[in-house]
Image (cartoon, rainbow, N blue to C red; front, side):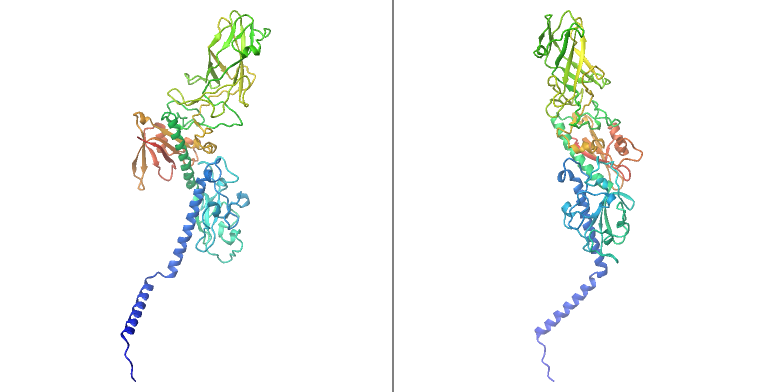
Length: 538
């Protein structure tokens, strides 16, 4: 039999095919086995979805005043969704089990996040941080009502994984069709990471506390920088750490911020300096109740000429301060006022009453900045006989003899005879919420009593505040120097009643003396302070 020889072209084709088969075989040997590759890839995809959901929840909590309601501060989380559409329920409660449900991905502005099996994520939160109904105040001391593996948590995101035996996933709202063990039972306050094939991403109380503390610190720092720019590069005098409800002390540069929050429904005097216009009322010539009264018409066109030929007159304004600025122990229930008389009644005794109406509305009164003698003070103007807009008023009767003349200084005390009720307090606040210097939610949630402020006179040649940071190996390193810092306390210790005791040991010492460094990265476990630089040393 005759065989024709192969062409050169055919030979080359067979050789190429043989080489290709050899290379493919080698490549297959190098690839990992499917049993080893599949679970690893699936786990990575699931963990990525959980991490994205966790970050979205933290971002929502930090931006709550901007995204949802400016009247409330950061830290609030949405309620779970009732189905896979991802829209948060308008309200939820642990008592009804509605604090557990589907991840509200649409409300969080993420994609429809799913694990490697294709199942949508589940979500549970502590009702202490739900957005409706709200817990107030919400701050570092707020207790949580959720546990994951026995650790207090604010929220947990759960990836269900593939359906296990007995799980029929035709009911999207039934946790038993997706979750296992304690994660699916009626106790919506406790979860475990070892239940079936569930995978968890947890937001602990500490995680969220640091996020919302950072937001509060940033807002306070901006407010303080604006405040200093308007007051000659000065920061406010502070309230002692030992007396959070006290008043600012001249010269104190380490303590709580003196914050004013005016409640319009309950007007209260809040100034430490006032310039009211006075109105005389009920002036009698003779010194007893049988003596005739000078007419109101006469008194209104001061000076008023009396029947005896004398004049009764006061100038249009008087200067008043709460207490006595020269005496730090002056009673806090005193309003001290001084004015001058244009003329006096000669030869007879007389009495008179003063009507004072204080207008304590924000934004319409002059302000005196802080100085070496006192904190920032407001000057309040009175308006005639009657209080304006329901503001508090005071009437007091004073008797004087001709020999003594009209007194240059009168002390009005809370125990004096009055025809109206007027609370006189030394409420000297420097940082004003209603004037827009700080967001109202900072005071509403009590952050001004969880964040201390410290600043140094280094701009005038004094020593600045030293900062230090602990590295991963435990070594301490200088972190520079600052003129002003804010320090947010961590979670309250069980035996600590006063917020000043919540700070770490190093920062407590720095706040007490100003001589030791502030620690920007405290050791763990223990102190959980967050230090924020308001102004670096120049």
